[in-house]
Length: 164
Image 1 (cartoon, rainbow, N blue to C red):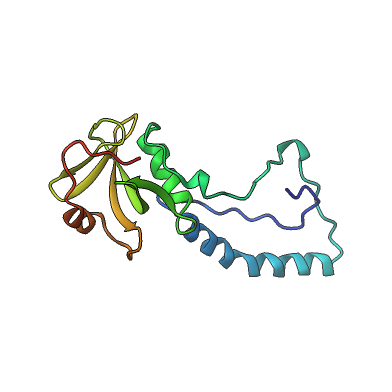
Image 2: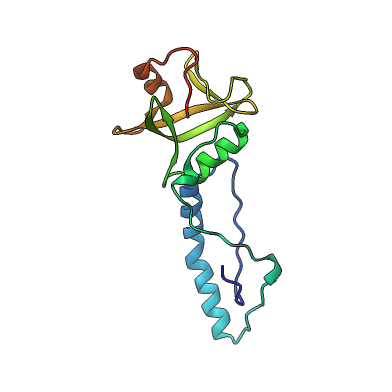
């Protein structure tokens, strides 16, 4: 947490399906202009502005344990976790005891039991506490990223199987 005075503050609009990696890339593009504005301000003798210390928040480093998906939460929370942990360390779950990394997903209005995986036409759905999540891209243990539909074709899961 840095609560010291600041010269420049820049806003960045985060779109609904922005991953942590895309956010980092977008913010990196803003950095050089902010540094230039700061150097100009310092050169002009501008004094920095104090921040409101009572509004400062901690941002601890994310851990792999936090990347574990909890299917007992809502579909919105699960999708946000997937976005927030993508690309690294990646949101993870287990299928048949093996780690399955989920790299892209979206919310679905369909309802399934918590953690239950289902193939609905070409969509791979997983139940949550509120609605379900449609998996779009996954990375099975020891394999490369692939579409969820391609993974489902190879996995041949049985009715009622769960993601942990």
